[in-house]
Amino acid sequence: MTAHPFTLAGAQLAALPSGALHWPDQNLLVVSDLHLGKSERQARLEGRTLPPYETYDTLTRLEADLKATQATSVICLGDSFDDSAAAGALGEDNTLWIKTLQAGRRWVWIEGNHDPGPLDLGGTHLAELPIPPLTFRHIARARASGEISGHYHPKATLRARGRSVTRPAFLIDSDRVILPAYGTYTGGLRATDTALQSLMRKEAIAVLTGRSARAIPMPR
Image 1 (cartoon, rainbow, N blue to C red):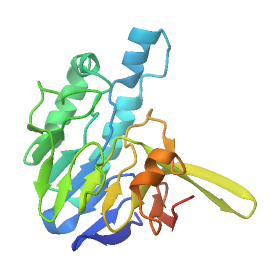
Image 2 (cartoon, one colour; image 1 turned 45 degrees about the horizontal axis):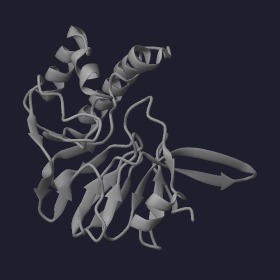
Image 3 (cartoon, one colour; image 1 turned 135 degrees about the vertical axis):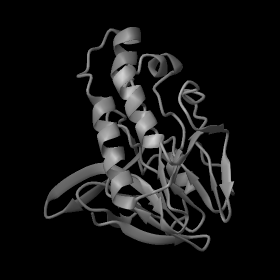
């Protein structure tokens, strides 16, 4: 696993190829926008059928990241489920799986715009969480500093040797990090979108996920 190490507000962090953020000094793993149950929600509300494997795939990757980092704390940065009903439809096996991952760890669910957090699962439920010198919340705020957020599902395109590859990406500058969506069926917003351009400094980078974390200048 080739991560991209960087510093934010004096904190030594690492952007993992999976889309998770690791803070080794705090034994902390951060993931955003799991959107568990998206296939169930789309079938329920839109009549669209997707292969119902995204929860399994997302939790498999999360379990692997926890084993690799040995993190003792986890922050889920909001939109952990696609909606509150999707949380209720999680199923016994997946509920037990999450509780097994939580065992022996501090686990914080940050409130998102899709759901308030899975209230029937263990862990702590917060609107945001300060761990100086950083603050963790779902949606970035203008003029914030030392901020870790998600929500936008950023993605970026790398062009090389006549090919273009688009992947979920971290956006990083001296004020903030916006995490990519960790969930399997989440889609994304291009880094060139006005909403992201207005939040990030000109010197911002994008770190593409994949087999290794690949840093490039944030596309403009």
